[in-house]
Amino acid sequence: MKERVVCLVSGGIDSPVACVIAAKKFDVVPLHFCTYPYTSEEMFGLTMNALKKLKKVAKFEKIVLYPWAGVLNAITKKLNRREYTCLICRKSMFKAAELVCKREGAEGIVTGESLGQKASQTLSNLVATSHGLKVPILRPLLGFDKLEIEKISKEFGIWQERHAGVCSALPKHPRTKATAGEVDELFNQLKLNELIQKNSKKTVEVRTFREDLRSLFAKHF
Image 1 (cartoon, rainbow, N blue to C red):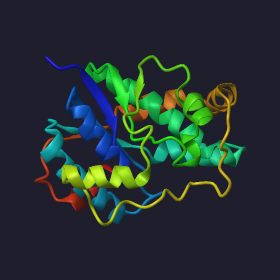
Image 2: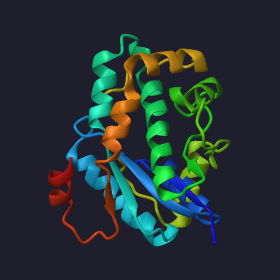
Image 3: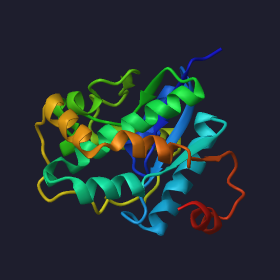
Image 4: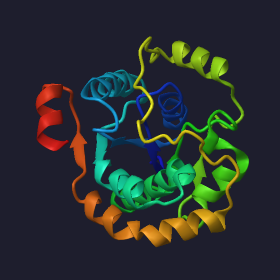
């Protein structure tokens, strides 16, 4: 029997590729954080289409959708260091993924992070955001560049010409070299653990794609 991992999957290019790679060795449970209204309903549709294609290749049983707007709203309203927004959000996602791991009996978290591709993905920021977690973070694309990842995506048959756009909470000048202490201190100041645990009870499981996307979106987000 394969060990299970939770794969953080966005509507972008990288994380679906990481999920397919992980599915070769693990039983995967994709986890998507729905950030509406920080992204649009159209972007949610693009993400669900990407997950539909991914299901055919990675052969998972279900997707877990986590309503993330409440957590992100708390971060953007309370955080007085705007440059840390993405790092605190990422740290919070890992904390939420830990809860999903516990519920699903998963042994680790898989991400599509690629070293240096984004401000949050510098080596120091990867260390800072994953510090203190109780499960390992697996990053199968860590040493790949964007062109290599796009090529693999096409080879897997999960490539899409259009992808979900950037979150509107992205700060103008994101912090590129944070320490674990800085991120942990800000995370604790915002007291996000309780909100993350509360919202984890609102997650939605999608096993088929028969339900109309608009009704799914309206019902839960």
